[in-house]
Image (cartoon, rainbow, N blue to C red; front, side, top):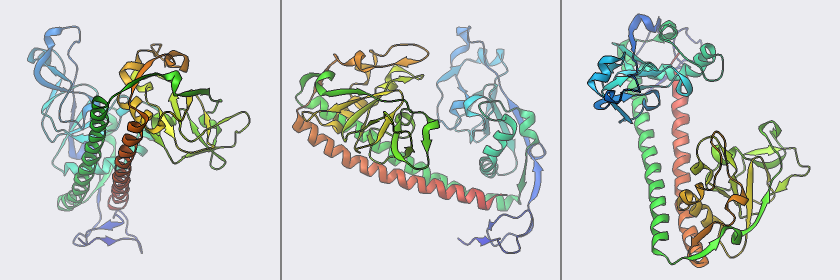
Length: 396
């Protein structure tokens, strides 16, 4: 596959990278000039006769899914402004946290008012790709930061540059090949994670266990106050409470953040188990401790830790809490809007744990699998970077 580079004496309205058989400038068009649009509606949620039918009801969080959580009846469809879409129609999320998300529908079903259906004779994959290239800029322009709403009128007025349909198709085919490879890679990672959970659960169910309380595991400790505003480009390595959800998983081996706030702060010991203390999601999400395998890291924010003693394997305990004991310990969390979990809430909780020998054996096994997952995850980050580069260079 040959692609030409348009750098020297750059021509206007021509992408930086282009297949050599195509010439001429791209044409700027408003989406309203080449597409038709419609959105849907929602049947009354108070009428039970409108739900539980055989019409898939697609909501904005399900644009990429091949199934839906809700189904509506024909009566529900007829009573509302819901509209039917076909497999392959372009669907755009207009409201809330998913504003700007776009995908070709994998489902024949009805859409609600939060989704805009886009139909066109142009190449749909090309439109999806050029939208994704500019989505951040458009959201900043029209939503003015934060969560907000798009509208059909806003979308209709947005302009992009388009080549001939033949060139659109060739570019779209290249992007589709990359998307298929990314999807395959995601499936590899998903299957490895399922295998990991199955190994942990099967081992636990088959091994002999002994009773212990959380208080037996080691010495609890609290941490100092540390917020995003305290982070710096350089300084002491640190872990902030929010990163337990967003950055790290069951194991912390490489520290991503730094701070110059050191006075009165608590430093990690290798093998500490760190628990988040609050969330707005649900109680289960709080039972997700990370074992930190680095000494001397500043810890801060709404979390607590346990210095695990030599009778237990901290790495295994991280796997155990994340895969086995979530439901058992979630019942100790308190609150509704903001859910809290403190060490005092769980210290007397009884656990059934394998022997230290079995903990060591299983931790070693799963760490090897984690290493494989990390390699595959790194590879998908390279694929996503490659796609981002192509979007920047092959589209205007």
